[in-house]
Image (cartoon, rainbow, N blue to C red; front, side, top):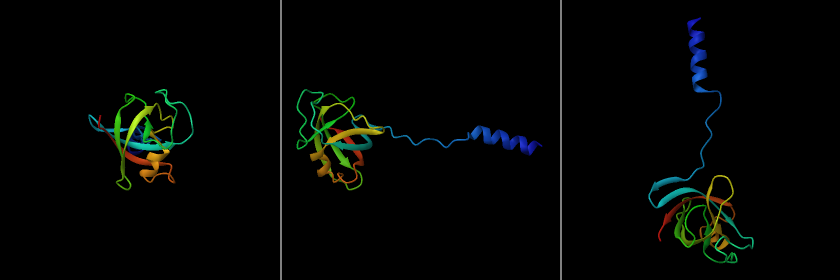
Length: 123
């Protein structure tokens, strides 16, 4: 009887559901983050008021000030680009940055659509 009661207590304490994996950005130090990047290429007006240019080295970020320069490194292949934040987003769950099509091409992530990246704020 005690073993059965102990088993019930242990199972209840562990919970019945596995923990969900977090996709929140990981902050390494003051100006460096890692998480998932996506890309977009549709024409629109950006949060900075500019017309979106899929050929420009630009990106969308939720909180960095517009005009911030960021080095984005694809963790899968080590390729990196410097982009200027000119828009807000991304709005896809678990993403930390939305890159222009040109930036995504340089990072070799077009086919995958998303990639694990490190962001370094450089100015």
